[in-house]
Image (cartoon, rainbow, N blue to C red; front, side):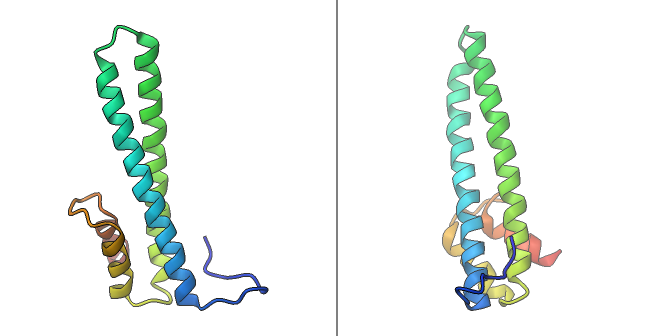
Length: 117
């Protein structure tokens, strides 16, 4: 995930950083939504006597959990790369606009932690 652009379409580094950050946040949010939906389905399936259905639900949760963790890492990387060309306040503002949740798992909290570290 580099901030460089191809020579055929030069872009403003800040615009490119904002785009990469926005993409990373969107991917993270979608991964979180997918995991939440799968968790609901797994909860419904947990009472089932069908062991294959329970196993599949658990496998799905595991895979989606891995996707969320990967999306978190990509988001942290995008935030750190954006810090090279954007003010910290602007980076945090992008995260807050896209993820309005007020939880420890919100994109804004992840970005803020990445920028402090």
